[in-house]
Amino acid sequence: MNLRQIPHLRVVVAVSSAAILGFTAISAYVLGYTDDDVTKGGIVATWQNVALLAFGFWLGSSSGGKVKDDAPTDVRVTNPASDPVPTTEGEPT
Image (cartoon, helix red, strand yellow):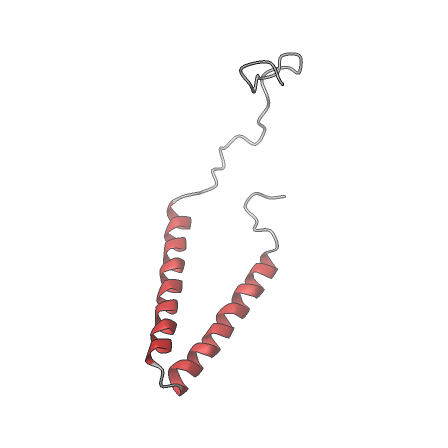
């Protein structure tokens, strides 16, 4: 598996798209056809949070967590099986 590939990318995109389209339809109904100011404020606040989350994700993915091409791909254990790394300080119970 390629480390740069998102597992089940099509499923992630499809579910995300369905959620955004569904919330867009609900938002259009609430903002266009209801008189409840509290619900309208909640809808607007939710869109603000989605925008902040998307912007934060965009900044995070563009500035950090980059895959380095010079990273070692073959990491080997340096100690042999006859000399294992101790995981406890004393004898096992």
